[in-house]
Amino acid sequence: MEMKGSQLIPAPAAEVWAALLDSDVLRDCVPGCQEMAGDPEQGFEATVVQKVGPVKATFRGAVTLEDMVPPESLTLRGEGKGGAAGFAKGGARITLTEEEEGTRLDYDVEAQIGGKLAQLGSRIINSFAKKMADEFFARFRARFDTTNPGA
Image (tube, rainbow, N blue to C red; front, top):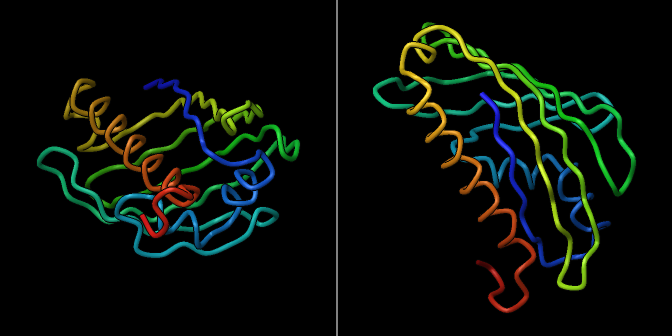
């Protein structure tokens, strides 16, 4: 599965960068995240509960950060296992670009899935991945929304 996108975050690149490396921010923004711990140097470990089509599972996984160029770009590499539901692994290249209105965050994701998840078909998986990305970025952007604090 591949997915690309771009988001405009209403904040300077340095603030967006710091938020992307903060385990508390990530825990609050990742849909279904129950636990998130770690740091940029050692990587992050997370527990996420999600329902993909008829398959509901608790995924435990780890993410490492590579090729970090503060506050411009980084690569995320991760793998999560959901027991009988299957696994997901892959990476994402993230690039931050300062613009007049804030920071444009571009992402390019490649992922592989296996187990019951792989049997659901690419249409369901792609739709789920887009929904997760949209929800993550809505929560992430809301952290910087000065016109609606606490959103």
